Image (tube, helix red, strand yellow):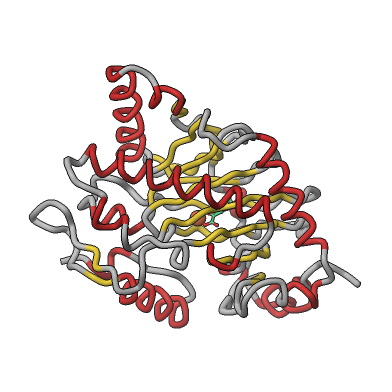
Length: 315
Ligand SMILES: O=C(O)CCC(=O)C(=O)O
Ligand SMILES: [Fe+2]
């Protein structure tokens, strides 16, 4: 009973027919993301303000940051990882039965070339579908951290997060458990294709294997793993609401030739009816509902094989 999805078999035609673009020709530097110690939020007013300032600056300049002393213990992160490993070690046929229909995903069904293939599998789980105790404990903590960070980012814009508070519910937010199998193919295939996240913000925990890369000042940077830290990144909706002050940055995961890699992502998303409108004027983007945004993304992926995202909504 093999747990591995049939990547080689299913995507064989892509290997046979595609002209390979060697991504190894792209220069990638190893970079240190801004690291913010969140314990300072519990200190005196001046220290607290400095901490908020750093969070806002990183979200503006990088769209990405790492946080430590985030309130989620190493023990809980390890328990969650064990649960994650257990789920991925099941026979492949059983994986789609673990959560509600459509939660288990692998590869890229729409890929028409190797460059559009993501060599990974994932459980994309609505918070309301979570049943295990470690996942539940993680979900509770990570969602309150996400809201706290969103409030800080809104406050730095002189805005109030409360409008979205009531539209980001457990039924609209997701936990995504990712697994990247080793990929021994002698040319570069992505673990996860370059993309931006279609949410307000994402909280990510990656293991020590590494592979996450992001764009900073037009260059790809690889993020050095720090198992004690959580990675925060701004999604498209925060970029739109902040009128381009915060940036939803393109990122990807590269495969490892011999090691499997695990990560967990939490996506802070609103309900489909929620309307996103820039909080300052003149607006860079037309206002849109989250439903319209998702539909446009789906349509572009079907038609072109990739997401266009926010540029579709430019005024
Ligand atoms: O696995 C990672 O490091 C990144 C995952 C990611 O970008 C995503 O799930 O959207
Ligand atoms: Fe992502």
